Length: 75
Image (tube, rainbow, N blue to C red; front, side, top):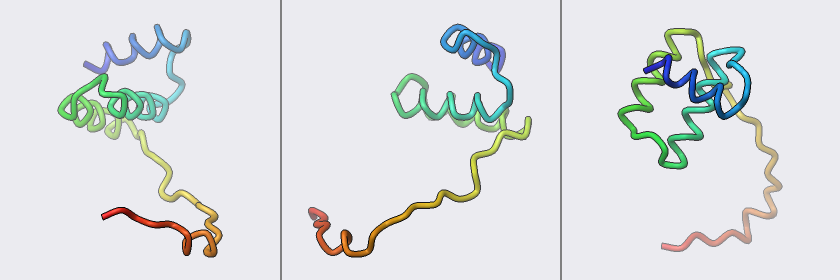
């Protein structure tokens, strides 16, 4: 399964992955676009984490608090 993922990555990107993190990003994109199932995603995710793939531990977002007053959430 992982070998097939690497092959697809190489075909699409025209280069081999340099790190397992690139493959992790790739499967997340494919999952979001419904190109792989949740089962495939979880299996590949587990394989990649065994190979030290990881996402950043935190994302920094700058939000101007005054804009939050104008957001309406339907419901």
